[in-house]
Length: 337
Image (cartoon, rainbow, N blue to C red; front, side):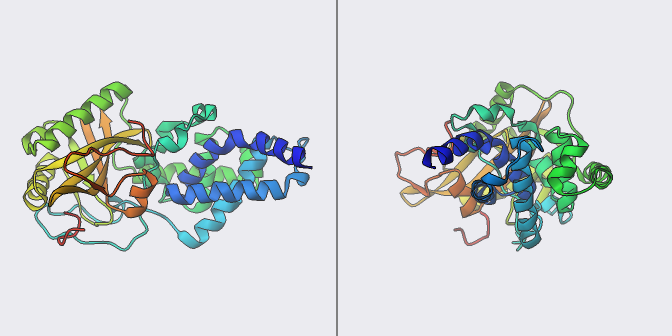
């Protein structure tokens, strides 16, 4: 019996990474995704005697279980937006306003890279924060239909089997989902996305300018339609001018002495920022960038302990220390700053 159980575990384990990415796309939370994959595997193990390989592949069977788990979770947890999907752009010199929404969270790349050869099957472009945010505007079943068909490449019949629906219903949900995603995407897809090395170079230049509190240097790296948003604050800013005004205020309010450590999430580059407090440095924000051939088009800034924990970031640094993240290889009075 033990050998049989171990054999089943070996059969399903290679699907862990892609199921994690799937659950993240559905829920918009790294922590929730990990929990739901564990629930999926537990349910699969309990139902292992019911699996019939003549009716569906093991992959399809696991996705059916994962989908049921996600749909049940979404009935309770609802959607996770970003500020730009909720309210109008803000005055960069206005007060910061904290929102009580359940916010979209980034997914550390390290959760997909942990020496798992199955990571190669994960389409990182479909994990980008802008796409993940667009998915949050869909109903749960529309979200499932779009991900299963357009991202994962399941046939209409397979998607219907996974969702427990008819082919006609899946096709209808897919049509509505595609239309809605086109409506809510803030920026069109760029045809000339730079290479990973070029994207890293843009962010490295940004980090250097940030460490020097060089606002003009930061603005030179931004596209004309750049957006900065920063949950849990509702405020978000559009355009280099507004971005620069806000960053001037940041350096005035939070100081100009920072320690930064590079991170990657959702197939995008970024950094964790530690600001000087007394003799040391305190973890302040996690910033993830969307980079195009023209420059940085979006900065998603997070200040959430759950997000920090998912990246394995230490809360404080001593004067001579530099931050490292276990999840990556590479409380101020005025709200966020």
